[in-house]
Structure formats: structure tokens, C-alpha cells
Amino acid sequence: MLDNTVVTTWVIMGVLLLFTWLLSRRLRIKPGKVQTAVEGIVVSIEEAIADIAPQHARRLVPFIGSLWIFLVIANLSGLVPGVHSPTRDLSATSALAIVVFLSTHWYGIRFQSLKKYLIHYIKPSPILLPFHLIAEVTRTVALAIRLFGNMMSLEMAALMFLMVAGFLAPVPILMLHIVEALVQAYLFGMLALIYVAGGLQYQQERQRKGDSNA
Image 1 (cartoon, one colour):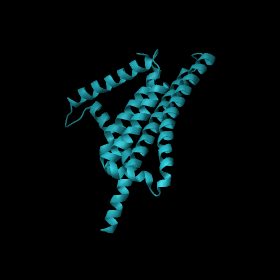
Image 2 (cartoon, helix red, strand yellow):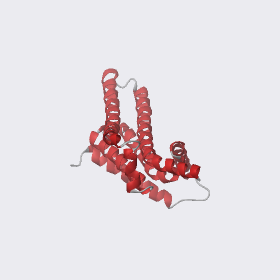
Image 3 (cartoon, helix red, strand yellow):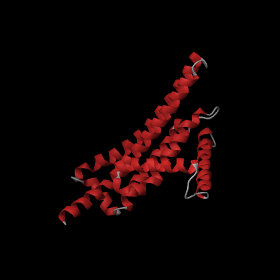
Image 4 (cartoon, one colour):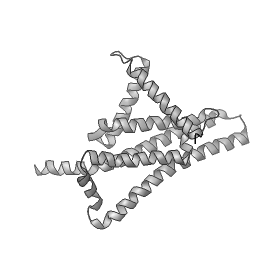
């Protein structure tokens, strides 16, 4: 069913793909204003990732960076008249949370191995296996519901405020929406980064132990 959420999501993805394709065809040694701005965004994202997972910053930039950029645009799309932010739909936030869930395990298995990655679920004791599995499910559900709840409440609060105050105070509402949309995009992306980094933590611990034994 092609509802507002599906259409808006595909439009955002199409615009991002078109923009990156056009930009990649016009890269210059001496960048212009657009290329400079994009490079600044990429560097900022890479530095933020390096603070959490310094050994895997470059590997995680494509996923975490794409997630951050998509969320910023998706959250702000609600400012366009007649358009609802996709992230106010639980199905959209659930899909994003599932992508984060799968990516966490994919990165962990890719940089270790299936056997070595699964071992950390029974560390330090096999008794903790059920608790690890429950934590995987609950944090994924919480990730989806947190973004959905915050964006839904934000749009509802803005609508109620406009109904009460009319259009006498549009600027404060607009600024509130922008700030909250950026904050929610940052938090979701940061939590995704922490989860993925957690999947790589076991490998890093093994490397540190190997270096210390050497």
C-alpha cells in the first residue's frame, strides 16, 4: 500500500541518490561551496564515529553516515506542508531498528567469524545467554518506539499549539521542530553506532589480549 510514509521515504532516498550521483561526477581538487560543505559533513561524521569506535571509523562511515543523513531529512520533511515525517510512523522506525539490529550482527560476524562472534553471548557464563538474547530484542524494540514516540508527540504538540495560538507564533514552533528533529536523528544514529561498536568490542578485546601476551 502506497501511503504517505512509503512515498515520502522513497522520495527522500531518490533525492539522496541523485544528489550523491551528481556530486560524485563533479568532484574537484579545489572544491566549490557544495563540495566543501559535503566534505565537512563527512569529516564531522567520521570524527563522531571515531570517538566511539576509533579502529573502525572508516568502515562504519557509510552505514552510520547514511543513517544520520536520512534521519535528518526524514525528520525535517514534516515541515513541508502536506507531508508527514516517515519517522512518525511505527512501521518506518521499526524497519530502521531492524536494519540496525541486522547490521550490528553483520559487522560483528564480518570482522570476526560466526563462531567467534557467537561466543560472546555465553561470556562470562552460559547462564547469561537468555539475558543477552532478551537484551537484543528489547533494545531493538526500544529503538523503534523511542523515535516513533518522540516524532509523533512532536508533530502532535506542534499541531495543538497552532490550533490554540493560531499562526501568531510560527517561528518558535518551527525552531522547536527543527531542533527536536536534529536531536532525535542524532540520538538514533548514536545508539545505532553504540550497538554496532558493541558487536565489534569482543574482537577489540581479543586483539588487546593478543598484544599484551606478545
